[in-house]
Structure formats: C-alpha cells, structure tokens
Length: 253
Image (cartoon, rainbow, N blue to C red; front, side, top):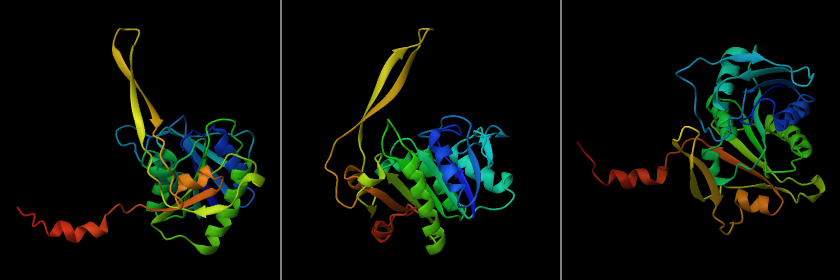
C-alpha cells in the first residue's frame, strides 16, 4: 500500500512524524508537507510564485520526505502530479495538533489537503488530536493504521473524505468511535490593534469560541464525551433542495 502523508503544521511537526512512523509499518510512506507552519490556510493554492520542493531526512527514518514551500493543498497536488514515482492508494493529512471540528473545517489546511486528495480521486483522511497542549500522538497514529486497513477493505466514494478527531487521552479512556455530522462552531472574533516599531498600525486576530450546547450525533459532542469522531465530508457544496425554489423566482435577463 502506497501512502501519501501531509499536514498543515509543517514537515517537522511531531504529529506528522508519529503518523509517518506508524503508517510506515503497514505501507510504503511518502511525506510531502509544507516547509513551515501553514495552519488555517484553507484550500489556498500557489499560482503567482514558484513552488520549491526539497528532499529532507526526518530523524533518520527511511521513508521519502519532501519539504514544500506551498500550502497543504499544493503539497498534495505537487506530490501526486510531479514528485511521486507511483500514485498513492490512500492519503492522510495530520496528525494536527488541535481539533478540526464543525465549520472550522472550512478554514483548516489539514482538512483542505484531504479535500484536495478526494478531488484528485484518492481515498483521503484528515486526522486531528482534539486538544492544544500536552499532546500524545501515539494512540492516534495507531488508530490511523487500523483505519487505513478498513478503508482499503471497504472503499470510500471518490468524492468523499473522512474527517477524524481523536480525544487527547489514554486509549483506555476513549469510550468508542462515533460516525458523526459536522457541528456549527462560532467565534467572537477579536482584532487586537497594535503599533509596529515604525509607528504603523497593525491588527492581530484572536478568536474566542462561543460556548453552546453540543448536539448528540455531532463531532463536537463526541469529542466532549471522549469518543473518536469520524465525519464523512462531501465536497459538493450545492444546496440541492433549494434549486427548485430558486427556479420559482423567475430570474431572467
């Protein structure tokens, strides 16, 4: 099994190394990831400057690894179309060092990399450890090995990816695996105004999540209750049930 691995935290992030080490035991791993932090870049791609790819050695591991100057979506496209000698059977993006829940997936570089893989026709998975500190990636990486095997056995539709969030706790404390829907995550965005050394004003974005009741069956609810959340995501954003209603508006030239 040929496995392409990427992320948005950068190629030297602990999460991607743990994931690559684990998946290397069940397949032939190639890593293609940003050469620096690229979180919250969404599905951006690089069009107005060249992409640079440099082979790197990741802590003496024997798998092929590329540090790429672009976004997570760039990394998937470039790896598949130019860098890999054979196409992957599956793509993993992660392990992200914070959750990717609900509507946050629209901002996430981790999820967008998996979406790019799905667009190109490959089974793709985005994996996040749902916490911000004292992270332990070992069980999350182990779970990804089992999940990769399940996907290869059962297949995914070509236009679908899985968004996986794993509680940051010992394996024995995890209550189960839930197949979930996306929740809605809302923030109180706060722009902090500051002055740079030249006297010019700049703004720094910080967001505080608005606490709201989690609905059972959603990814947020599962994580709050120490279960693994797996959400199948379909990248066709068409609101099909609204098409006929809008036709009734009789919009014309």
